[in-house]
Image (cartoon, rainbow, N blue to C red; front, side, top):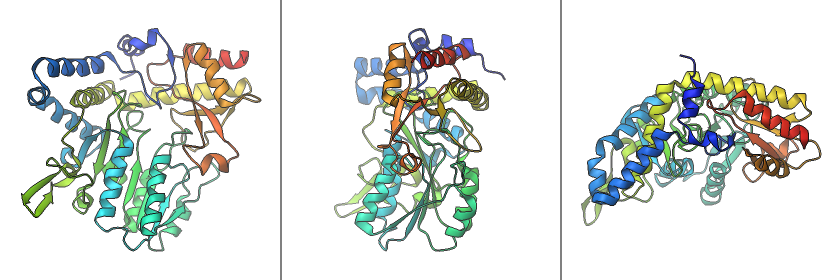
Length: 393
């Protein structure tokens, strides 16, 4: 079904206040999500936190089931977390505690990897002596599959791939990457932080061992939420970090064992109001139609790229396939100056700089770019407002 833009905007109070083109940072929550969070907070205030959780247990479990449906997995293989970074840490260091990197080994990572993920690799290099090998890219910036295939002819411990970067709008061919990794019997960690909610995602079809994401971006959930998928054959090999009585069973004064499958990454303390909110946001996306959302976001994004190019801005996305992140620069104007000018006009965008990626951006001679990221509720008129401010600047 086509997107009902007016309905989406009516559900989004923030549309009356700002032109929000920072959905790759934190999108505007729709009213049902806001109400779900507030409703649970009121319940906690009325009857107590433990009692409110017990009363809302069906909603909390439903959120996990909705997440599983969104990413194409089984409910026992997904977990709700606090952030994408927390999800990556749980899985990566879960492997490390299990001895996976005790003898070092090669870890292949793409050029557009997010900073917090890469920092874990640097920590592991210092601790375990792993060799970090940056994958080659094709001229359009995406992962070079031929070079990756040759790279996997030598022993490797892990492949870390980014579906969509935080700082540019190309879409990596992650299903092909997953097939190559599977053929070499190497686990794939997939960063789906920017893809979940703005395009269809099937972790089983991609063949990844781990996938991670957040709730606040294109899924339009509350901040402080994230999600983790771990394939069952890999979760059983991982030792959870920060074990508590929710992630492990205390068997005797000297013995314990982790919970089964992805539940071993659960934690006792969490914002259950936000988890319910994330489940509501996922349901909202599924009911709207992820395929329809994706088509509208792509159409708006290509329109904005064309408009920016027509007025002299330079778009830096690349990619054979592109999505809802538009990175650009304006001649003679630093990215943060452009962001401040747009903010003064009530238009939300951000600057992405090399602190988030020390490989791809500097490698292309860029220290910072302006990042605009429309969602399905945005309009062509809002894009024109942004371009008009660029012209005036």
